[in-house]
Length: 204
Ligand SMILES: CC(C)(COP(=O)(O)OP(=O)(O)OC[C@H]1O[C@@H](n2cnc3c(N)ncnc32)[C@H](O)[C@@H]1OP(=O)(O)O)[C@@H](O)C(=O)NCCC(=O)NCCS
Image (cartoon, rainbow, N blue to C red; front, top):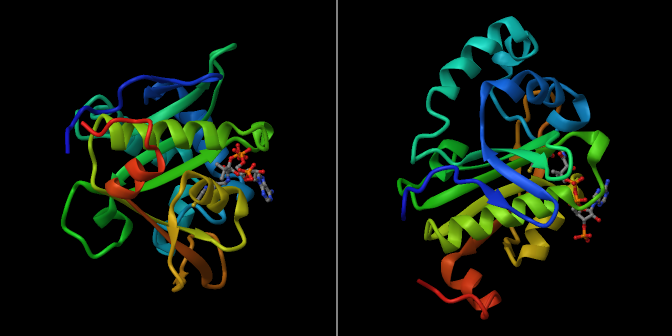
């Protein structure tokens, strides 16, 4: 794969930009909304209390921001084009760091969240699609592996519409702020499937 980093990506209504510290407090406060973190955060439960404390989190974000423009970092803050208002975040990390048993950086996981104030306008799909197109077409990744709670159609519909394959096996996942294990659909999309689904796009 090509390590091109979190290059600015423009869509019809959005701009995806490499993260800066400026929007991190807002993004953290959105992440702390239960309907946002419920089926998104799977950080071990022992960190749950620390996650809720901005004074602790601020230090982690400051450290992370030092690498926001590194070429092996694929994480974007999502802004509305019209107003330059930040509304969410999308990311594409090594699948290994999402708990998949693979040791290949060109096999990636994905994540996304949008401020509930803006949900249901197709922004999640627009941002996620733009990121995944960029990762396949420009960064030439081999595969995306990801999961989504069965109870979270707003997320798994993004995978389905993009042409992901849904496995007939589900996975029980421990989400940070859920008391019980949650059943997730498992999705995958290879480079070959991506280019087959998007025949008008030429493989580099
Ligand atoms: C997942 C998320 C990013 C989607 O963003 P969004 O801007 O609200 O979603 P969109 O408007 O682009 O909708 C995506 C699809 O879900 C559908 N959808 C949206 N909200 C829905 C809901 N509450 N119930 C069922 N379907 C829903 C849309 O109709 C659309 O499907 P379509 O392709 O058939 O039209 C957003 O809901 C979110 O931040 N959720 C919390 C964080 C999270 O769960 N992240 C994913 C972890 S895997």
